[in-house]
Length: 178
Image (cartoon, rainbow, N blue to C red; front, side, top):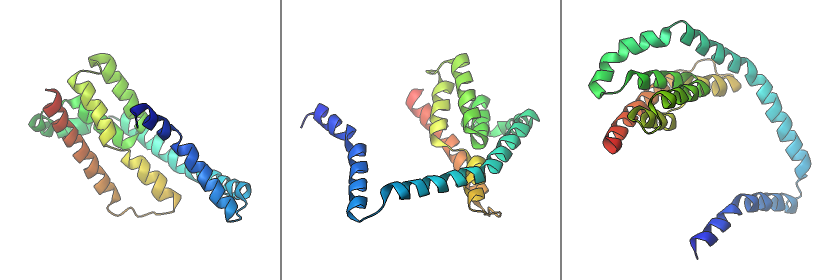
């Protein structure tokens, strides 16, 4: 089997899987369209229920950024940056990434414009985006969607995971590209 044939067979995998699911549902006597509509309604209601949480997290992110809280946090953590030899822009990106994915992507584009995508900071920014997540957004959406008010250790562990992703990104990019 050649690589082209393998690639062609993979391009039919998802449509084939969908066909198998529909065929199985039809064989089992499931009213596929009605079940689909019911699921779509539930999904729409869930989306409407999430809107207040999304607005809250975006307002909180905006307030945190505009108040200078991120800059203060970067100044406080700058001694750690010197130890691991990471640029302050990378820490700023890591903090923003925990708060908002689109804001982190915009900041990454800004880093690319200033330093270039193939620079150390450009590669570091790309690696960081892939190795961390929007912790506060996830907490707000997922915990809010099921009505959990006490997050317990989720925020702390999420932030520790983000820091681990940041530290690992700095280490890996230094080892591979410097």
